[in-house]
Image (cartoon, rainbow, N blue to C red; front, top):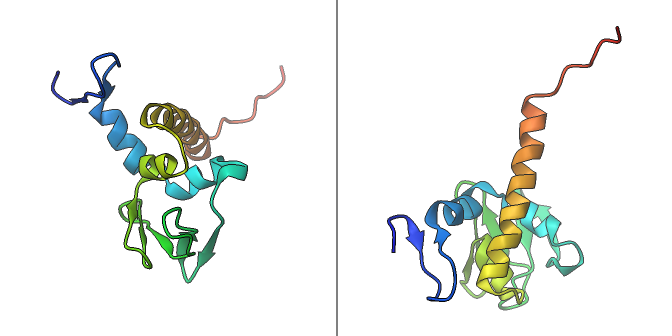
Length: 124
């Protein structure tokens, strides 16, 4: 196994560790939950925090720490990152990573457009 790669099983291709890190750290969990649409757990902003229904204990006590993009359920004690959340919602690891990678790229594209808006074109 090469440096910086995580192996799944011999019949699967390697997923770069850097991609896993970016999915966990660079894709805000509220963006992931919004992208889930009808599959998403109920969520809300409350007291300055983003909270959602814990898929483990079904209590509205899972709270996202914006500094590290991890959620912690203050009822059952379960911790979640984006990958963990999708797995708990029934995705397998590989499909969760593939979907989250698409959402990360879309999110980064949208953020880049916000910070670098294209100037209006002047007709000739």
